[in-house]
Image (cartoon, rainbow, N blue to C red; front, top):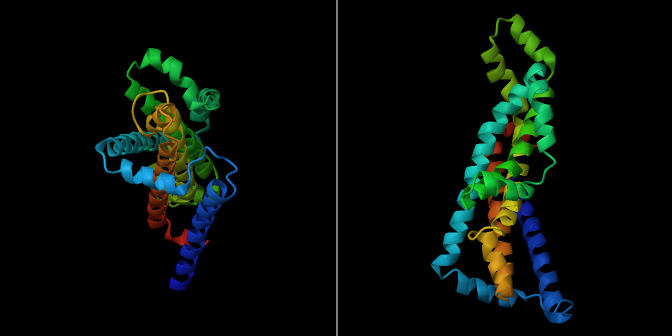
Length: 252
């Protein structure tokens, strides 16, 4: 098992190294995109940026926005998905309205939210919330509806209450699908964050836009790499939490 884990880490490292080699080759050897900063230029910009407080303030602000909105999306989306998945009447009353809202891109809410919420901070958080909410909701509904009805019927025949069926049958059965939704939601939360912050005046998204308008192209790549690393780390954290709750899934 240890050898397998070591081999996987080597393969993952090789993937990142290959990306770096392609980037270095494209910017220094053949120079197919002359305006694209090289890894050396970006590394120098990163070293200069991380020494100042501005960069870390923006990183903290963006991370806080993502995690707060993600937690709210999970707290609302999971119970709502369970309720819709378990009750056809409740689904008929709520799901059609949610399905109408779902295709609207989160960033398209910005003009309306400017009128409704006023605060730029609330607008960014709500856009992230929307991006994370629907993957969690839909995967939770799918997980609940994918449970064999015979399990609940057998539990009922043995005298299990509705709460006991929910705790011992519905939640364990839907957890794999719920965690899949959480991982997808975390990735979409970071994607929507950058789009929302491009229209605000703070955060990593604004850092990227500000670097573009100032012509500081290496800082654009610094911001993009920052988002990639933070997004990867966040998804890894969600997967790790899922692995602790679903140890039987790790062999798959």
